[in-house]
Length: 135
Image (cartoon, rainbow, N blue to C red; front, side, top):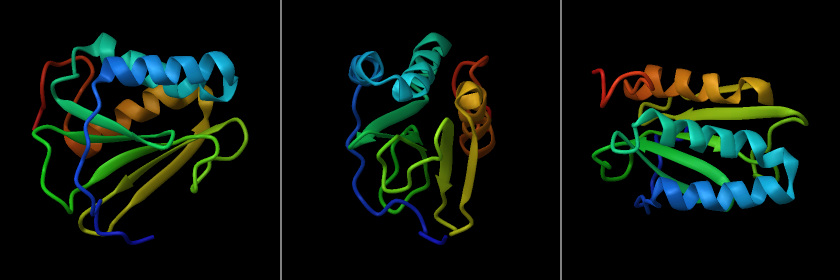
């Protein structure tokens, strides 16, 4: 898959707002629990200033700050019902790169939070244990 980045202007939503939205989804539909857990891990990490997020329908889209102009690389956590829906019981996380060298990994939902942070560290240099970017 070659996309050469996200071509749309980024419409940031506050992490707290996304937490409420995905928490409500998880309360109604258990298959969204891992997405809510990812957002809660960002809020607990103090990295809300280093990462910006929005939702695309239900997908969670994340970029580093400051938010770049399009096209730019994003990490997408795909939701149940997404156009790029993960398999049953799995989380799918994708890096859509400006270079076109995209990554996509599916793992059991129990691995969602560590997998998300692996992408944040590798793609954006944002570590949950450190304040700000490491690059």
